[in-house]
Amino acid sequence: MTVLILTRQFDPTADLVVRELHHRRVPVFRCDPGDFPEEIGLRAHTSVDGTVTGTLRQGKREVSLSEVSSVYHRRPSTPRPHPLLNGDERRWCVREATSGFYGVLTALDRPWLNHPDVNRAAAHKPRQLVVAARAGLTTPESLITNETDAAHTFASTQAKTVYKSLTGGPRTKDSQQSGRALYTTVVTPEEITPGVKHTAHLFQTWTNKVYEVRITVVGNDFFAVRIDAGSRAAHTDWRSDYSSLSYTPVETPDDVRRSVSRLMSDFRLTYAALDFVVTHEYRWVFLELNPNGQWGWIQLATGLPIATAIADHLRKGHT
Image (cartoon, rainbow, N blue to C red; front, side):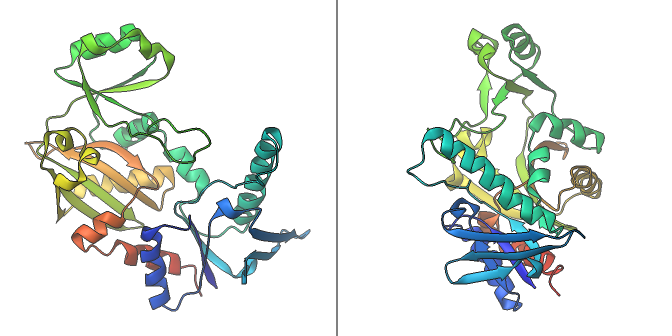
């Protein structure tokens, strides 16, 4: 049986998992869905009894669909159509390729880390806040709006307000990657303009914090790391200044662990990276969840065996 890893060609984080699987002598077939349909061949037959047979092939490598035991959906790119097709043809080919490729793989009914449909459902920050609160986690008061008056009123009633992007930075033309990053920004009521009406905005009350915590969850394994910011920019959003950060593995409090486990279960997630701030009163406040968040730099900085946990989980489907 073979573990299928879906990610782009350059992905050092996926390399860590591949290495762990090789140590366990678990066969791996790694490919990027972005290479489909021009460089990857797919052949799938569905029988009247619901059995799926066929192959996935790239170059000289080939895997039988019946041999796929689990799927690691890491950082795949979108199918790329033939460059000589016109715009309408390209868009149609992308839709058809995506539906065919993922339709076949999801029809195999194998364990995923994580299933792409699960990732999409869990990626919406407003829903994360509601589900997290219902799971027992402390969350900041938040406003999602495109109304200037509502945003101004919210900011006026908070001691300190921040703006956060709901989906990341704007994407460049014909790019699958986000453009410039939009970091968490402190805003005053005077800075809120009628431009708010042009899209949805997330405003939150600022939580005074001592440090932040990133919890990487793989199944029942929790890897919590304290993040201390060494600059003013990083104190507002640690992503803005990685060079100033220091990392310390910590234990997750039992009540937080129980609530996170419930949150993961509610979203049907096997893997997630969750961000918290910790106050002077040692209160853990949930900020957000990334169902496909990066973890490689955390392992390199701390030595925590995240790749080992992921490989072990993927291996469970390998017999």
